[in-house]
Amino acid sequence: MPNPADLTVVAHALVSDERGILAADESVATMSARLTAERITPSESNRRDYRELLLTAPGLDETVSGIILCDETFRQDLSSGETFPVAARRLGILPGIKVDAGTQPFDGASTATVTTGLDGLADRLAEYAALGAAFAKWRAVIDVADPDQGALTANAEALAEYAALCQQHGIVPIVEPEVLCSGSHDLSTCADVTMMALTLVFDRLQDRGVDLSGIVLKPNMVTPGLESADAPAPPLVIAEATLAVLAETVPSEVPGIAFLSGGHTNQAACQNLGAINQDAGDAPWQLTYSFGRALVSDALHAWAGAPGFVAVAQTRLLNNCRRASAATRRPVAV
Image (cartoon, rainbow, N blue to C red; front, side, top):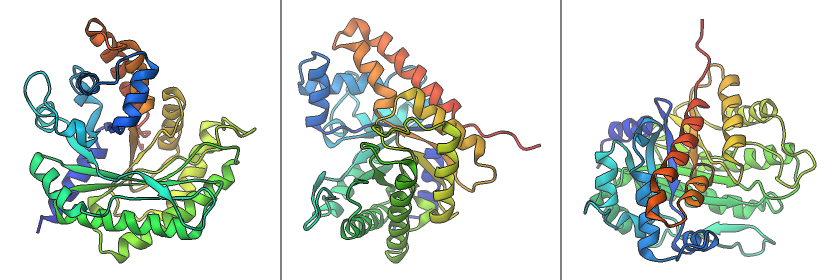
């Protein structure tokens, strides 16, 4: 049985020291679509080269504690001949792996989905641990337009089962119940659905015996929908609403909360995160980021598949990471 103290150490390392988690775990289909949109051939080698330029950006470890990869990338070698997990650890970044298998419609609901991937998960986690995984990620997708109670419960139970299996294999679970920001809903509706989702998730985590000191929570910020007449809301309003929900739902044992960007730009996501930290007071958790597109989209566009533009792309990535890192700072108490 893995030492629970080791899980706690890794969980704290993922959220501390003004660093966050880089989500580079798009599926083969999603990553291929993004390459195609940039007029880059969606080949296995181009997917690898893109992830390599992200991981090897000089000094990335100053702002990034961990990188989430998909199965394909986790098994690939860099041009140096090292595997991605080995190279990440050498570069001072913990390697993580996405282990869910995507979503499927939830029976009886209109648009609600449930995330799949529990079948065979224990065996896959054992293999990923042997390959060097320090942490894993499982994403539940929650549509504000259809907060079906059955789907919310099913997703919470799947997250809890995933988290328990991760800890049994010495892997820190990132628990991600994402309330989508797409739509025209207002901020209070997002707050209500986020409250329901997080309440169920932590009830199920505790029922399953998950050690909360050895997890990282990856939630959405509480915002109006991107198509709402109220969007964008002021960062301080988002901060107040987000912290109110977290205070009601997240136990103090959880080491840190790494917010997802959820379709917001780097600038908007960082402004919101900065406001959350400015307003956090003595909140017991580290409050950081686990952004994907908000960190990497500029780099992908700058690279465009050309080796000569790798350095430019890496500079774009690092600038976005530095902005996100700055947003994790809390005022110094006097």
